[in-house]
Image 1 (spheres, rainbow, N blue to C red):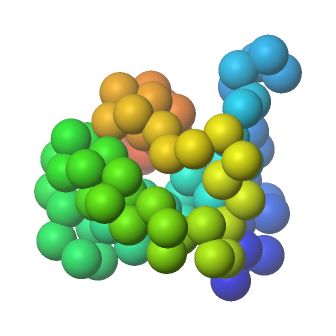
Image 2: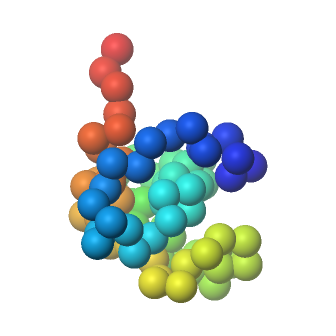
Image 3: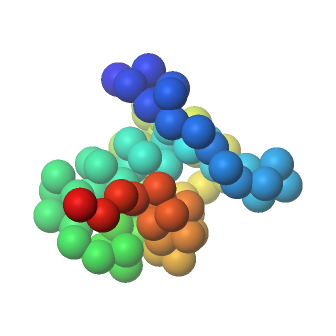
Length: 80
């Protein structure tokens, strides 16, 4: 599944790449599928499911805050 995101360019500065972009996107998508509809809900969901998420994602730097999800993903979104 993670291969789907390999073509997405990660524009973050090298120093701020503590979390794998693929893992961030997968966590956010899973949270949204499970009903999260705000950055806060995404962060809360991922915090609550951290143990399960670590079974298949590289989360050596733990779960991001809701602000970090917003800061990383929001610039990638496209308005239609």
